[in-house]
Amino acid sequence: MNSSRSLLALALLFISFLVYQQWEIDKAPKPVVEQAAVSSASHDTPTSSSANGATVDNAAQGRIITLSNDVFSLKIDTLGGDVIESRLLGYAAELHSEDRFALLQNQAGKTYIAQSGLVGKNGIDSAAGRAAYQVDGDNFVLADGQNELRVPLTFSKDGVTYHKVFVLKRGEYDVNVNYEIQNNSDAAIEVQPYGQLKHSLVESSGNMAMPTYTGGAYSSSETNYKKYSFEEMSKANLAENTKAGWVAVLQHYFVSAWIPNQDTDNQLYTSTNNGMGFIGYRGAAVTVPAGATQTIESKLWTGPKLQNKMGEVANHLDLTVDYGWAWFIAKPLFKLLTFIQGLVGNWGLAIMGVTLVVKAILYPLTKAQYTSMAKMRMLQPKMQEMRERFGDDRQRMSQEMMKLYKEEKVNPLGGCLPILIQMPIFIALYWTFMEAVELRHAPFFGWIQDLSAQDPYYILPLLMGGSMFLLQKMSPTPVADPMQQKVMTFMPVIFTVFFLWFPAGLVLYWLVSNVITIVQQQLIYRGLEKKGLHSRK
Image 1 (cartoon, one colour):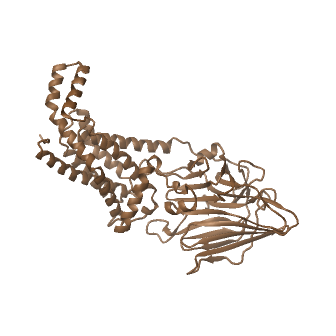
Image 2 (cartoon, rainbow, N blue to C red; image 1 turned 90 degrees about the horizontal axis):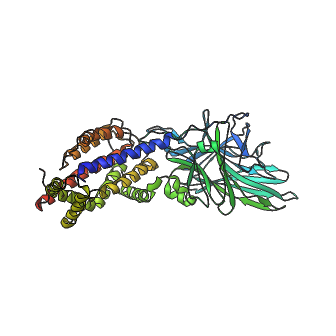
Image 3 (cartoon, helix red, strand yellow; image 1 turned 135 degrees about the horizontal axis):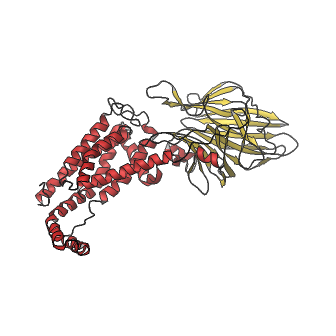
């Protein structure tokens, strides 16, 4: 396989990958919006008798309080104790904006909130209403030198006191949401904890070059990680019984997830109602004897997709950084990327460093590819003689060619292996750059102020196309087939058009890879010329 055909094969694989990506976006119909005969509201709880976690509405609202640590600010509604906003202090809403990014929010046209409560036989959150908590103060901030902020919300009913305690830690995006139940009545009570994420039904967005997923996901004892889209929620309710597990809503770079007590049995569920999608869990019934105190624990993650930190919060939560089937390549590449970034302090330079390492690792294969191509060229006169001698006798021709390859120690497929290896690496890097929140708004230099977005002036894609054209022209063996010649002529243009919408970081990788390939090609050819194995004629 000569270098032109190798490039063509890589192009076809690449375009096939993009077409598949677009098909994944387009194949699913729009989410079915259920028009329920109830008003839209900010409070919904699972009914105590429903096995699938169906929701009811409660339009009331309590007082809004604010809880803050050094990484985010949360707004809590005292009616029910729901988190109705999480504003991430370290992430700008837009590039160079002073406004901070709001993940959870309850705005006109977009609802995305984290709800939790106690249902069951003696539940305080039901179709009749939510618990109206009391709290002293409106604004609670983690003080300098303090590592933990505890804010209890209190509700009393029938001799039982419920403390819904929010615990924020310094530098952490997970919040402990615990219930401390003091049963001062003369009878035992039974409650079931639940937590759910409520999100407006929306479609996944993006385009062929940069598809993004917005929807649900969950983990159970049977399934480490699985997406459950809003479209799937509209068709069928999830009902998964599991020990441990979690539920989440994903979007580009960010995730919110409820993590129940990992030592109890939980039911994971979804439902849709009035244009809203719900994904949540219901824990096992908890009995609190008369005169006893019981604590029910859960956690809420609401923040960026930080793999290391999420892996510490819950098993498999780091899988929400979804690298697809190429995860086993993407994970070590991401570790390499972050390691180099720690040395050079610039994500663009880190991408260039990763490219150098990848090309260095593949260099033996690249050299073998060009050596195999050179030997194949040396055999062309003999092969032409065979064609003339055996004519249409393809079986005899094939036998003689295999014999020739064996005698000359030539592998006719020697040029294919580097292509087969490069494509999975490229796909892994593609998903790494797409999923790594660290690259969001990360500058390179000059006009590239966001490596996760497309080049605003299209300079990198044009340079990439130029490098591809140069690499094609340096191919030592011209393509004989007229159709292949036309395809090869227009391929740099086609790739350039595709890359106009790619993240600048990915275009930078491909550009640097092309430049390194050109240098490697020249070094290999010079070595082959000294051995008499290469000719540019």
